[in-house]
Length: 423
Image (cartoon, rainbow, N blue to C red):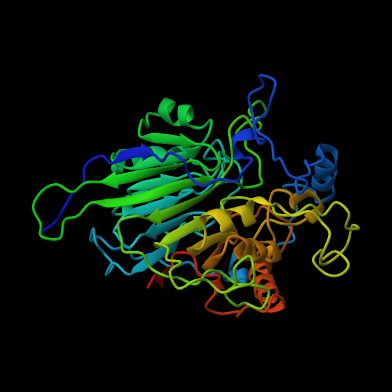
């Protein structure tokens, strides 16, 4: 028999593990000001004049250096979603890429988590102008049978779509939205009351209690953790950095603990911070880490025209964002990481806000993900790189770091579902 679930219960978690200086909230503006900052040397604000000059040189909106969609031949599959509430055997996690930063993840317990859904043709304030999809939309909201949790990384238009979230709420009224600090009021004003906003290092448990008949009915609980990222926010000229940006972790708290690999060192081997292998009892539950939209490294000291800012002598000494290593140490390891690899050129402008493939591999290692899937490429044209380049450079970065190029950190097709064992 079928088993339905009512509106979930959400409870904030007290005394969550966090860095020693988390209480200082260095990412908050001080002296009575409202807003947020990136509190690390790895952050360098974009120079507006340099950005204008770059757009002028590229002849914005009139000439592109990218291949046509037909030439690029990026595969888009029609996703196949499970309609069963308990669609897995309880020992696997499934992730379906819906383009850009949108993934639908099915936890072993049966909860469905949708990350950064933008299921529209354009990512802009209006439907008739703005960046248009390079690849076709794999599905529409009404084709997704179950959505329990929606997680938003930040409020840029390519990660937060008003038409999409309103339709999700209409079709899945029990779905609960988790957003960074400062975004809850926007959701409520959009007619979406089921929203919880969190600051970095805060987390909440969400539980769906079953009701109705059925022998297989059971409660489902996930822990949703708001974590640091290096980015910005704003949906207009007056709202820059007034709300927070974040990465997220979602952990299945109702399935039995598993023991996934702890991550990878420089040689692609399991490794703890102290260089020792994990203890046999270091058990973790099935979990997914979603990096959202993030930069990793300041490349200001790298001369213009440098083809690889990770090559010597720039492979050491440039500041990297310490938040990811803290995430790995305090909240890792993770069964799966969803990590951005595109929109990184020109590096002088983009490095602080967007990761290139090598940055993504470093984030993969820092956060101690067992496996990873790529995102933030192949959907909208947002950087100067060839739309096909991120996947090629990801393979190169993995090889450079001594990590297998297949089966560890992969780039899947849009619409493709990948299954990960958590035993």
